[in-house]
Length: 186
Image 1: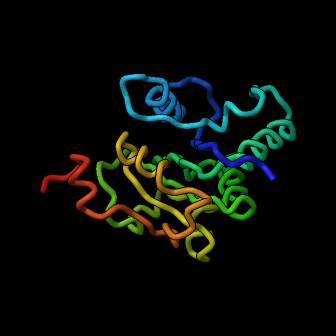
Image 2: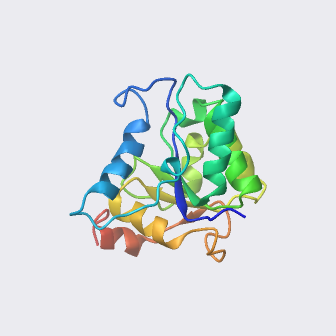
Image 3: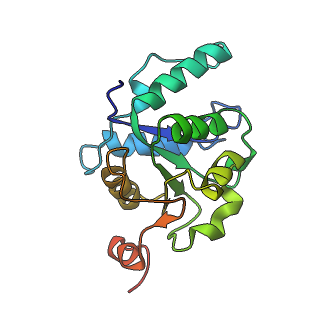
């Protein structure tokens, strides 16, 4: 059995390694928050728990590395932008393995939103692999804005070890939490 203490971050890379041309910028933001000693934010990055895999690696080598990282994770942070649903390669694979095999909750983080109070209204952002698992009831998803306080709180609360919440694919923080974080006015 794997030691499951990592945070797995999935995002649509768009076939590029240019940090300004894809959603990798959000992954790098999470890494920056975690590395900053002045910020009360820390994660165990699942991507750093296995050897580096380059874009030139074979598909099977990359698949094995992703599986190993997911198997060592307690949850997945899934960055959802307008282009994520267009990924037909690795993001659907990561979602399927995380939910079907690892049984880990998904923390769906949306950079385009300051608050999330009705996750069902964001279904246009969901890749088919996520949509089908939300619809069939196998996904446990917490929907949050991609903001530091929300991401940190979700990472601290929701894991494979906390099976009580979210119980389905439509979890979200209440309005009071958004007000407390300063995302909404009282």
